[in-house]
Image 1: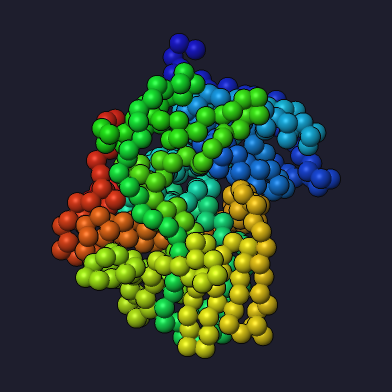
Image 2 (image 1 turned 90 degrees about the vertical axis):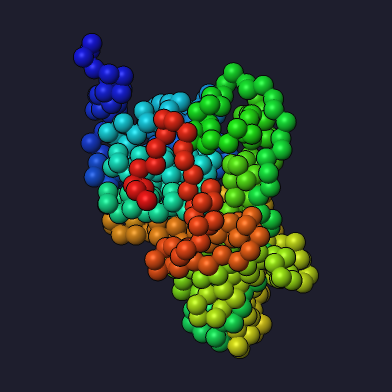
Length: 445
């Protein structure tokens, strides 16, 4: 024992325990799964979205959840409670381990897959380390915080032969699939323009500093971030309201500040620009020019593709201008879509659908998670592979770069470059130096 370090001991312990707790065959709803068909999952990031992803995974036959990691001890406690309740209901022996540091979870050889729902600035490191640990990955959107991180992660996934599904769950939603199919089939003619309503870009960090609670390792939460203005405020890491063991108030607001996120551009843009790209056949590519709102009289944030299609960030629906969604304009008509709603100019092509979407309903997506599980078994790409997440995230990042520079920015999606634009390359959303001791693997530019 004296010759073993802590991680080696934990890894060996996990393997030993697995040999006692995993049976030769495993039954779910009467169907038996051989050891080769079972998928054992761990979860990194146990907040609201992490719990939603657990609920989605719990509906997938053949999946077992055995561990979770979070920098908040209360969220770790909640995860154990929810997972063991599920295990008991399924008739399994309850067992769920938790870790403050996700590296300890990745060291476990009995875990095949990880689901990552950390703040965006941790996405790249956690996912790349998972690739290096030979884990497949369900990674929440946006793919990463910066462009360089997305490119590094894409390389890590492919070089390590991993399956990665981006949590852009609208790709697996019926109304968005219908909209994509109508556009791709040419049913509304040649697409000339697209309106996409997502919301505002990030703003400078302005929250007052407050004492860090004992249950939270905020230094670890910060990870590679370097900006000295960042400090703890409960809105950044929503606390659990015991005894319900639920967060109260808004979802974590780190996403709406320049120093820690990409605003609505990276939040809703990761959803709606993703669908836009899919419908236009631009997955893995993207616009070639980004013009910020207000530049030389430009009213809306504008993106131009090489084929002439123009995308603007503006209200797309006259009856509900604040709703976030997409409208495709073709030479033969239009189709518009948002969560729970789709409508076409020609009712013969598509009957209008509109329903109320409950809060949190789209954050739990069993179909998207099942698509990921199927991809793991087949070793074929899922519906939202790493290249999809990379191109969508680049689109979001460059929008914010152009907005903050206050001028148009050109991008070559084939060479993944800004040309001679030194200001764009120097922007933090292209790349920033991590604080010690963190380093970005697979990035050598």
